Length: 134
Image (cartoon, rainbow, N blue to C red; front, side):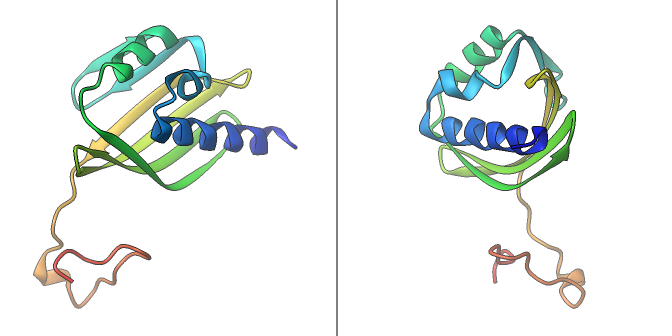
């Protein structure tokens, strides 16, 4: 197995562990001194322990659906839907790797919205995702 295949497998396990609620396995991907940034809130979490504590203390019922993982070498991107207490939030996770572990992650979140009627003649539904109201 090459490095990219190992990295992809580790990221897949990270998201699967997140869905299972397995905090230890979820955070095994991170280096001890990893940094996690949330640009929308301006928060930065330094260290695997703080990242795990922040996520482990989240009060919502969370579920993770991975739409796509892509990357190569040091930089990998996961497109996910994270559902908090039944409300979906689309997320993009940008992970930077060194020595087989995440050293920096930035997560971006966006709420779903209805497509404007003015674009109906131009758009088609994404695979497995009907347009709202359709």
